[in-house]
Image 1 (tube, rainbow, N blue to C red):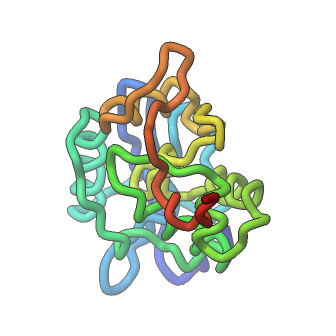
Image 2: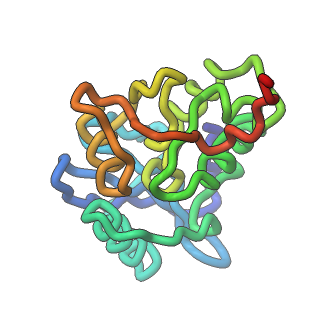
Length: 193
């Protein structure tokens, strides 16, 4: 992620969850405050983003409340205007926007996402871009899995990823593989017939 710039004050707000404490790192920008990073539990927050102070505002309090509801299983419609996507590289933005479009209750693979964004050989790069997703939960990187249905990695840990997929209705085997008939973006694959 690129540096945030010093024009707007930086703040953080902690948010307790069943998985541990999350932190919302945000800036008081115009026309509205925006999230620059969402730290998952036990993750080292990128404090190098600049001097930060504890603080909140109505926009961030609303975002925190929506995250709490999402973690409790409620379907939440997110507005990406609240996140500072411009600090991501162009490739990562393409990956994150493709991930954002995967609907609740569905999953895709790193390879299918790579094909969807026009970079069919970049499945590892897709995984790396998702691994550095500054806005997990809002941009649901937990919906990306390996080609064989295994969960892959997740900054919040596999227990959290498993939980997020379960509350969204994604069926999982006892071994933790997703059990879906079709992956989102599968239409990007050529027919084998």
